[in-house]
Length: 332
Image (cartoon, rainbow, N blue to C red; front, side, top):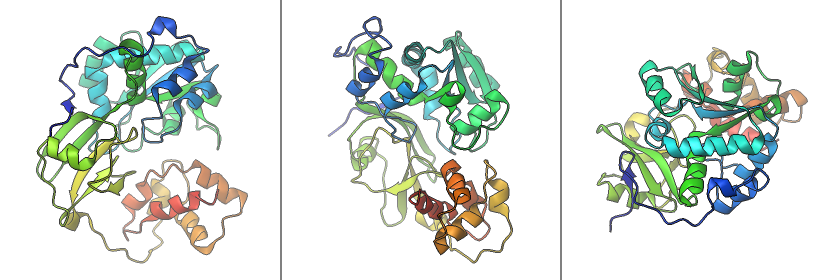
């Protein structure tokens, strides 16, 4: 059986409207509208979109987060280029709902890409960010926009900026223009070992097995595994797991090449130096392992950590620091 998975370049058939158009939606009813269409944060967090909009009311700037920095994922770039009508509509509606007077499109520094974007988003301010991981983190985006690091625990909307990801705005725009709720997920599908690479749109709820069968992509469970939503912040999933609203990508990797053997820490400090927020991953992990998690300093650093995985990536001893930090989050 073939499922409705389309490459990004394929036009959509005319949809049937089941939700009101933009002229019928007021800022007061916008959060309820987001609940009605079933929108959660599609950047990976799954945070209720309506709550984020309510929190952002009064912000002077809406930021479209197109700083796609996870290695091998380009779905946001595809959506920005091929479905700009929906993204722009979602951004304008969100800005109207919170009262923002300015819309910024934040993207990686790429002159050719930015030149193409200017054809579609002429009314927005396009600002480039470093093409390195994890430049797309909300806190790092805000730091560049305001010229200083926000205080610990402060969210962007508390400093006048509401940050929304591309996929969420696309979903809002599609619901406004075409009356279609959140029933699909744009994502990157790749198998680096074979050079297979596609940006697709898949129905939410479709199993990963069915996705691979539909695109005729072979998978060997004995020698390969699937990572959901990025090499740095993603997690392994199985064939019977389903596409969710938060699925950014599916990357198929070779087990032998990916397996690493953990060795004792050599106290090199590489994890501390690499942390984009200037935290101390080794010290935090040491406290987690010893059960010393009650201090205010520990809780403040753990609250700031967004589990980007850079500490694990640079560790010469292949210690899975980010896994321990994820466990530490449960102590908050």
